[in-house]
Length: 263
Image (cartoon, rainbow, N blue to C red):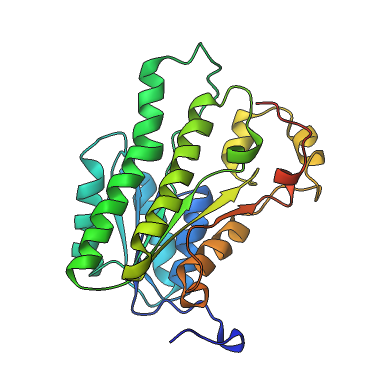
């Protein structure tokens, strides 16, 4: 039953979720929020140390089982293994959060085909195959579920040096909308969140003009990872049962502002 507005809550007890790239940044915030909401949570990353540290931190947060999986989504075989291993550890999956991403500033035409294919594999091919395996498992048990893809506000703003990242994330927007339409009658919803600059450690390492970038935000600040996480949980929970195929900007209005489109 669809909850009334007064009954909206993030209660994921009895549900299982897989979060790719779930050991840091946005993915870590999503995994923490799901764990606190009672979900069983599987997180994956490329290194065992990152996975182990995330699992140790997540386990005390809620009653659900937490497990860590090591995978590199640049490996074409990784998505099918991830879905299978997560279900083996947690039971049938109800939520898939495609958060892992390959990033980097590679201006055109300096960006070569090898980098392009790497970004396409991680940012588009892997979410496609993860979603396909996830949906096949849902169909096998005649169940509904939710997919939330993490894209970027660069799908509307665009930026110099981000030809690979912006193009592959635009492809993920297309996948989101098409799957939402194709799966609507099976109780499976597909949505996306489009964060702007998020206050995570990575941007402090990659950019030396953070004060200028922060000042360019309409709100005067970057987005917090937990703000993205709450939007992901909303799109995955029963309160958003009538919502599918949306791409929700979470950037303090930055997508509305035509200034500052540097890399």
